[in-house]
Length: 159
Image 1 (tube, rainbow, N blue to C red):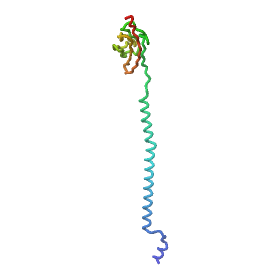
Image 2: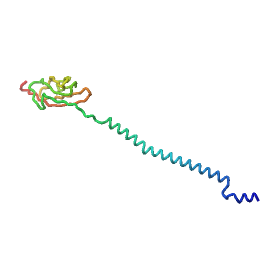
Image 3: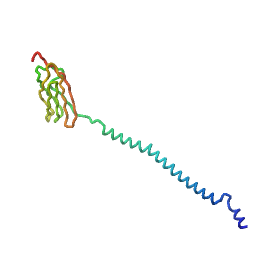
Image 4: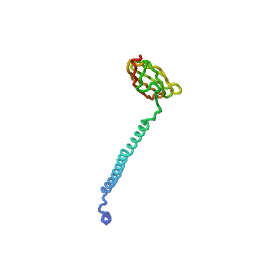
């Protein structure tokens, strides 16, 4: 009767093999839940963290690529645009930043001068026989450039 009573008190699904299978199923549920959370974290990092890193790269590119305003200037006092030279040799006079190198070109000649502490420069240059393009380029100590081109006509009758 003891055996029968034990069988009666025992639940129908209290099979030892069934209990171990239930434990294994619970263990796998936690494993699946952990894998699901891991996948969510990876997806979140791809869609949230990586784009924010790219934004930082864009910002640094924008900051380093930003154009710095230049204070470079070049003005010519002589000769004036579309002027007529009475001699093949003409004066070139102007202003730019102090310490700049000034390159002056014509078809017939080229000169290089340095601007003084006030930015003034002056030299003479030879022009071609009839007309010439005078190109003046100032290069600052920082490497900034400014160029002016002038057409100069030479009066051949007075030569």
